[in-house]
Each structure stands twice: as structure tokens, then as C-alpha cells.
Image (cartoon, rainbow, N blue to C red):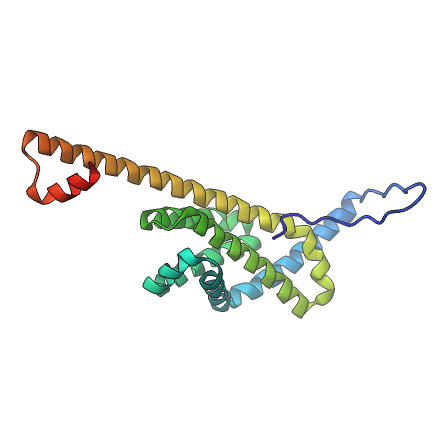
Length: 215
């Protein structure tokens, strides 16, 4: 998956002419056109969000073994989680400022919940990157269908889309690690309490097997 778009420069003999810099007016016009194309495609994706979610579920089932168990044990919850995440992601393309906080909260909750469930962090990050790749692919497909001549303009917003994916992967990882640390702390406190109970005689007999495993 490419996180940057590189132009190919032709090799010329002799002197290479210095490219003329774009004027601010030309740059802003290109940016405005690129945003128009992005927003048109993003609105189409919002209208087709259930299908987009189904496609992500198929990718996870095919490419991420750790998610197969989640899809088998609770397919509805996994689908809804992906649907919410995709909805916030696409909405952020349309309204970055207005949708940013809700999107970040959604990603944080997913990271924390998956840590509680014991899903490997690598699998979770892979799922987020698959989702980002799928959104980008669908943006290109929709633009190719609606206005093929506008596909070239998406190059100007590609970095913004992938920066969003990177930001949320970092956020998910932070939430996951923080929750993992909290789980470890709770486990340590539980072990200390059981050990103290065994030593002073206040521990429950029912806790003995757990205490033996922990110690």
C-alpha cells in the first residue's frame, strides 16, 4: 500500500529545464477541485456503507486469521464495529473538523475493547489498514465510475487520506497498550490480594486454584 505518490521524472540529456512553480491561485483551484471530487465519492460511499462493511469483513476473513474467531463467535458485533469505524472514517473525509472527535473516540473504544478481548494488536492494526485501503480503493472506483477524468485529482488528497489512517492506527495502538497496562495492574492487584488472604487466613477456599495458577 502506497502512503505517498511519487512522480516519475523522464531522463533527459543536456540541461534540464527548471519547472515553473505553481502560483497560489492555481494551487488553490486544484485543491478545491480535488476536494470536490473527494466529497462526491465519499458521499457515495456513505450511501453504500453496508456493502463497504461486507467487503471489509470478507477481507478480514481472508487475510487476518486472528479475526476469523471474532467473526465466528460474534459476527454481528464485529460487523457493527467495522460499520461504525468506516462511517466515522468516511464522514471525516466530508467534514474533518466536525467529525474528528467522534472518529477518534470510536477508534479509541475499539482499541480498548479489543485489548480487553485479547485480540493481538498486530491483527487490529492490520484490520484498520485494510479498512483504509478499502476506503481508498472505493473512492477511486466511484470516481472512475462517475467521472473518469477526475481520478487524477485524487492524487492531491491521497496524503490526507493516508495521514488519517496513520493517525487512527496510532490512536488504536495507544488505547490498546493503555488498556493492556490497566489489565496487568488489575491482575497484579488481584494476585497480591489473594496472596495476602492465603497468608493471613482470610482467603476463600474457592480462590485457591486461581491463586495457585497466579503464583
